[in-house]
Each structure stands twice: as C-alpha cells, then as structure tokens.
Length: 328
Image (tube, rainbow, N blue to C red; front, side, top):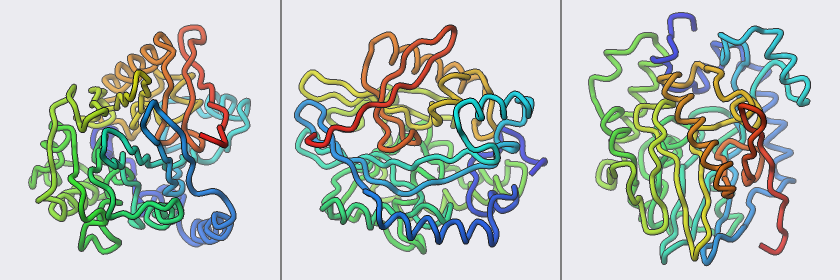
C-alpha cells in the first residue's frame, strides 16, 4: 500500500482491504455472520421533509483499517480518541445509507451504494429497496455526490453488465464526471489499486453512458435538490441541499464521513481524500454552515439511519443524532 499517495488513492475496494489486512477468510466469516444478523434488523427508515417522503435504505456497511486510513495521526492519539468514544481500535466501520426522496413529483435515489463489488458486507440495496416497497424501476433519477465505488458502483448489476435502475437518469457533478470519464486517467496514476479503481469506474460509466447528465455545481440536480460544491474528497465532490415546503436538509456526501473523527477532528487528514487540504476546507465550511444555520443534516456514512445536527464545540464540532420518529 505504501506506493499509493493520498492524492492517488481514489477508493479502496475488497482487494484494497485485503491488502491492508482487513479481508481474507476472517473477513468472509464476519461478512457471513453479519448477513445472517442483517435479516433480523430493519433495512429501511422513513422520514419527512416538508411534503417530501424520505426513505433511507441500507446497502450494508464498509470498513477501513485505522492504521492505513489515518497515517499522519499518532497511533496513541488516535486510539485514545476512539477508545474514549467506545469505537473499535482496529478499523473504522461506516454505514452505507442511500436515500430515496419522493420529491417534486419524482422518485430520486441519492448515491447507490457498492453493489456487491466493493466489500462483502455491502451490496444489499436492491433487496432492501424491495423490502421498503420500492421497485428499482420506479426510480426516476439517481443523483450521485461523487464517483467513488461505494457511491456509484451499485448503479449496475453484479457483473457490471446492465443498469440496476433501468428508467433513471444519472445526475453527476460535471467536474467529477470530467475527471473519472478520462480514458487515460488510470495510466497517469501510481499504484495498482488506484489504476484498478480508475479503470473499473470508467467501465461502470460506460454502462451508464446513455443516461449520464452532468450538472455544474452549484446547481440544481433535480427539482428540490441542489449540488453544493465540496471538492477535496474527490476533484468534483458535491454535497447536497434538499428543500421541500420551507424545510431544508444538508446531505454530506463524503465531505464528512464519520460522526466522531471528522466532526470532532475536521483537520485530520485521511488517505481517501484526493486533496487533503481542500477536503479540510470543504469539511469545515459544511460543518460551519450546518451548525450556524441549525439545519438538519443527513450523513451517507453516519450511524444509521444517518440523520442529525451539527453543533459547535470549541474550534471544532460535534454530531448530535436525531431521535427516531416511528410515525414519520
């Protein structure tokens, strides 16, 4: 892994996790156990935003080895921070929370999850959509915050042979699409993993060619949902502002992808961010706006089901999870 720089590490799939020590037989055993337990847990959660109905549908979870993810943070400091918050000390587990918004007369999916092509603990979105009574064919648009594997690879089937959402356009930040849509990108990157992810993402985009719609950020992705530029995690990453009937929701994408580490320590660099300094600036701007405006927030990787608020805490912030509303 040491030949990959932060700028060139564009994603970490199952192969990358195995290389970093978080795969193999033990990982497969954990995945099988989690799959069995997942059948007993709720795979979707419904809420309201003005007149819009919001359904969070789990794609499962992904995880990254901590010593690989935060190489610049002293090990003792990182372990003390996580232990104080009752978090695992060997890996960073993340929820994968795609959102379906019935808004403005359209059914919109926000990010697609991994499919079954990234981590064995993910890829549950199609099954869980049906559990929620949502036919994948009923999705009118897929809005993608960025083109990392856990946000777009689920748009095609397991063999990357056909789109999963057969009637949906795929709306992508224009700068993000320009970057990943370059057929020569992989050749300019360093490291087998980075090149593999770039080639695979390019291949996924080819399966979606006839339905891709780039939108400049800031700009309206679909009625009621706007791209908010938050580049740094990737070159064209965009968070979202969702509005309905006077109510607003800020959706993080991956500008903030952990409820403790990147909220309470927003300046910490991680290897997944393409441009760490730009990512820090975007992250702080997002958190500052959310806290200052006291707006409701949704986090794609936040603890299930991903809703909460951001409050200022000294020169950083803290995440306040929203209580579940059973009749929402």
